[in-house]
Length: 125
Image 1 (cartoon, rainbow, N blue to C red):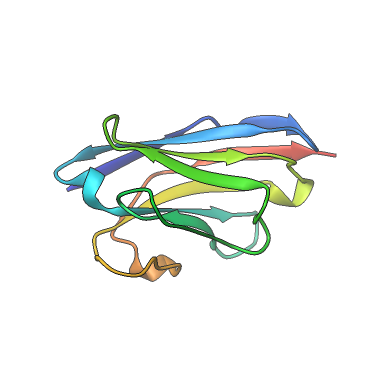
Image 2: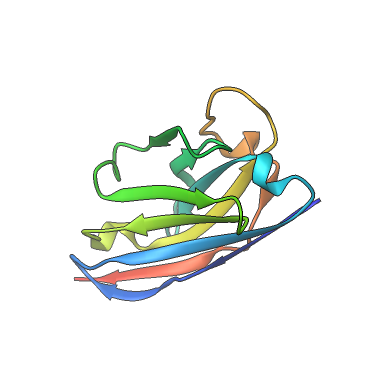
């Protein structure tokens, strides 16, 4: 079993930055690919980005490419989402997820095996 806890959300003005963290605990957590998703009010959950277990491969949704960066520190069992040039449309609850399956990075929420409870990011205009 893997437990995921997100932190770092908050209120920021448009154009600002935030860094989210996802602390993982549990067996083999550092060997899983990790992903970030977000869900805005009244919307379905959407993929933001993912990172391989080694951290040598990343993939991003077009909506955040060039603005968001995912990284991980396996020694600390922590994954990060650095968000720059934030826009009001980035407002959402952000979730991290773990994918136990080895192979290509996956982007569908139903492929994820573990989820955190989320952290709210609000971007004001």
